[in-house]
Length: 197
Image (cartoon, rainbow, N blue to C red; front, side, top):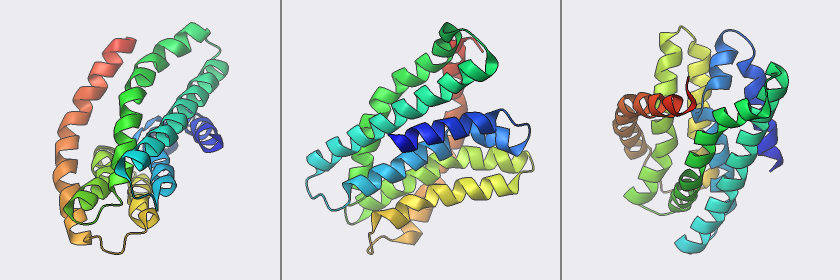
């Protein structure tokens, strides 16, 4: 819980600084991936997919809600806006966090599986990070791209799997990341239309 709060405050503080830090603070992939890393760590050693998936969903859910709450609470304070304005901005993300925490909890549990299933699930953080990596490179911020990529690779390290095929993980990351580059802007446009931005 503490990690979610610290990460939410850090992201909002970064968001207030012009330039690369603003891009990083306003991003989603690295912050969600940090929660995913915690979730992968929490399910290590559990053998039941159901039990580890539920533990993962709980871990991810607490992280996401605390991250969103701290991020938007600091937004309200720093921008001196009414709580309703902060809630209006947070609401679509809170709604999305319900199914997202359940899905990511089970994805984290499945990273522990041997073979292609585990490799696919380990590739997902890089795939969902690829749009922000590409955007930061297009903006001329290669260090931000490298930082996001390093964070996206952390689940591979934390999972503790020695049998993972890194070539397969890289290929799956590229394929799914290519799809994410197309899909993510559509999802963000839909969410932003819900909050009226």
